[in-house]
Amino acid sequence: MNNSNSLVKRLLAAAAAGTLLFAVPMSGCNFGDKDKEKENSKASTASGDASADEKTDNGVVAKSPHYSIPFSVFEYLYNYNYTTFVSTYGSSMLDGSKGLDEQYYDETNKITWHDYFLQSTQDYITYIMCFGEGGLDNGMALTDAEKKEVEEGFASLEETAKESSQTLDEYIKSVYGDKVTKADIENVQSISKVGLKYRNKLHDGYKFTDKEYEDKFAEKKTSYQVADYYQYTFSFAETSEDGTSTTVDEKKKNEMKENAAALANSKSGKEFNDYLTKYLKANPSAVPVSSTGTETSLTEDEFNNNVNSYVESAFHSKAAYDESSDMTKWLFDASRKANETKVFENDNDYTVVLVSKPLYRDESGTRNIRHILITTENIQTGENSGDTVDDSKVKEYADKVLEEWKSKDSTQDRFAELANKYSKDPGSNTNGGLYSNVVEGQMVPAFNDWLFDKNRKPGDTGIVKTDYGYHIMYYVGSGLKSWQINVDTVLRDEKLAEDYNNLKTKYPVEFDTEAIKKAQVKKTDEESSASGAANLAQQ
Image (cartoon, rainbow, N blue to C red; front, side, top):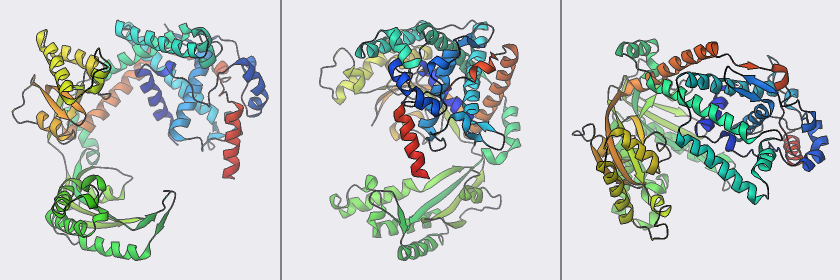
């Protein structure tokens, strides 16, 4: 199993979004009221979990030169770590009738699940503390905007507290732990925000030479090359109405085998598409409704046109290497030639693959773009929230934002500020609306066509309409070549790992290893009962 690194990455992502210590623990992590805790103490202790009265005092359990973490916060993070794992991977790997220190994550090496959650919590704390120390040494501090985010988080907690007839302090203790204070939360928010700012500054600031790209490419060429292919899958399995089971129809299986063999006789991409077009027109049920509409609502010409469009757009792809896929292993064999075909038999279907362009390095260029997405939400949450919102008003709003940018200091940096202020695109409205190294065809058609206009010049602006809303565009310039994108990711990760190791040496984080072992997941009777029932059901 190798979940530790991915779990730490999820915790880091939560911290980057400023949500980690403002997230309410799920049912498996109840730091609830004392009366219920006393009622549950017997059941909790039986499953390996100690009550609050049995805990260590709230001394410092992790410290670096300028930061410290008390036991209460460590235990909160341990619990958050646990609930994040369960929500991501499910609870089937854990036995709810036993304590985490009574079951193995890795039995061969005698590593318990308690050890696993302790280690991943230590890894996360070490990460933010080391980068936080680096940030402090480089003059980083929380900006006014980041301080405001923290304040807004507390304001939200206070509103929730009022709904429960509690003060903010009482609510923090009931949710995060009896000894967690507002100051603790502010401290960890500060560490994580400064640390992740510094981490991102390092990661985004690395520059690599052409030679470094070429040398890394040469180390493992297959990982950075692609192959173009046509693919179609003939399914012969029947799925039950409730979607819980599948059965193989042997008659249909033989029919699909014949169809797959016929398609595999194609000698070119055109023949592949011609066969599919004929097949799909004869079998309307094999065409997704989203592409054709309902069969009864389309004329014959409309149906045929939609099938033609479907075939042209759906079955020609570019593959990156995936060592777990038999198809890509075949595609990436050095002996592959254009127009070779192969049928892959799976449990429920036959997949036919035709090579259109064998293994190659994609030299096509990419482009960098900033955009501000304006939607009806911009208007509904503004001064005119009561107005009826139509398309013209969304366009008018986009025009006003573009004019706001043009009216004063029309630089890329200011465009980025406005993107963070106005854009409703969650994928880019915290990084100035930036999408780097966009590959042609990656974005929706109207967005893509504007970005890849052959006459496009750095600094060009415009407004593009898509199904998402109106995009105010700012063309930054050309990016990496397509083949360099994955190479760049590897180079950045390696350089960041090197810098992190240096930070760990420069700013050692010390843990009270005996004290942190007392961290436990707190369960309610309801969760313990549910876990026990689930385990009985599996036996």
